[in-house]
Image (cartoon, rainbow, N blue to C red):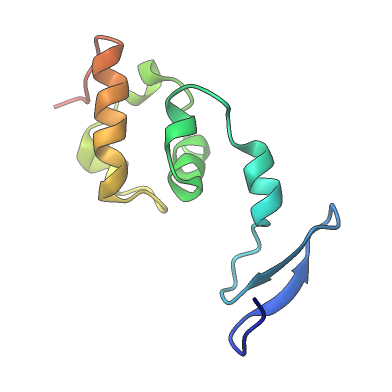
Length: 97
């Protein structure tokens, strides 16, 4: 797995991993933080962190925002919108227009 572009790192919990970017997120720690169920469990780690960073942990909180606002969050990409829309619809909610 080691390559010229990746450096070996160790997180504060002792997990060893390789990264080529300046991102300090440990993949093992991130996997441990992933919820087992709920709409956040369906998202990629960057998208989940983007919502959590903005205080969104429930579909009710999500429904306060428009799709455009959600897409402006760092880490949120257009591939996550259909999953979020489905979670909202399942709960009788929708994005703010």
